[in-house]
Amino acid sequence: MSEVEVFDPRFARLVIGHARLERLWTGARWAEGPVYVPAAKSLLWSDIPNDRVMRYDETDGSVSVFEASCGFQNGHTLDREGRVVACLHGGRGISRLDHDGEWRMLADRFEGRRLNSPNDVVVHSSGSIWFSDPTYGIDSHYEGHAAPSEIGASHVYRLDPDGTVSVAVSDLRQPNGLAFSPDESVLYVADTGRTHDPAHPVEIVAYAMTEAGPVRRGTFARNDADGLYDGFRVDRDGNVWTSRGRGIDVHAPDGTLIGRIPVPELVSNLSFGGRKRNRLYITAQTSLYALYVNQHPAGW
View 1: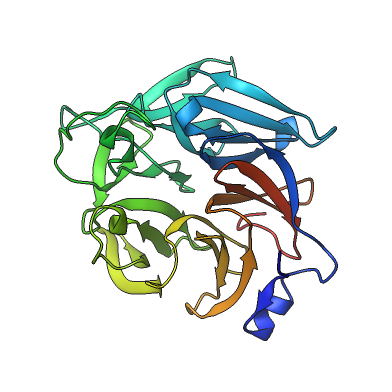
View 2: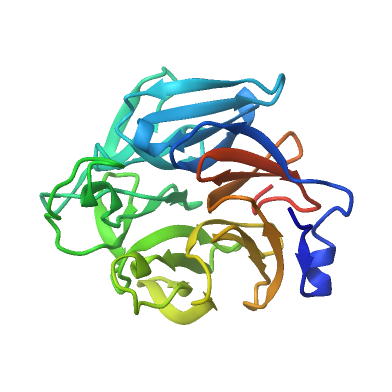
């Protein structure tokens, strides 16, 4: 296992020289969707093919099954009240774990047609929930239930507090990970269309947030050589920490690739956690990894 790769002095300030990548647990079929829950001092993440959500307890390092037969959950986030919001491949919707311990479906249709398989999710300061809806959960029975797309396309949607669902981004092949810049002026979305079209570019696209909705600004990051951009997070300085192949790429706000964290397995997603939010949790194929860094998530 190699050390972190520094391509720009800006990245050197974000890592800790003697901190090492730790494998905290292994045993998943495809680990995804990590979210740190401060009130529980725990990290939740998905083991999609096994249809379960796992929990890592920071207080003692134990790992347990948090939820089983959970609708093939994928991405997770927290809303403005600290409730867990989940993307369901099997349930083909967006669900929320309320304070009473019950899951409640927030949206599973657009204009009367079932969604494909919501993949990743982020909450805006307005309370609206933004989520990507590629077809991975309906492509086979491995991560959901095989079925034709009722919508016939893959979009990014906006779910408003009043329950209204609208299309926010419609020009990507398979929209996947997504996040806002710290000031919410930019929406970043990964396109993993390469899984369905070998000629499709591997990129993260930036959209300017306007009153009329997101407007495509252009490609933020692109790498056609090795691996796909999947899930990612933005830190409080606007750097984008993104999964790509067997590692994490870190891009400065201007798009420059400033560093890379190699990981022994294919990386799916990541999340900042820990008491001071300076522990980077990484879901990678069969395992959960962690690395202490000298940075914190946007909004902390």
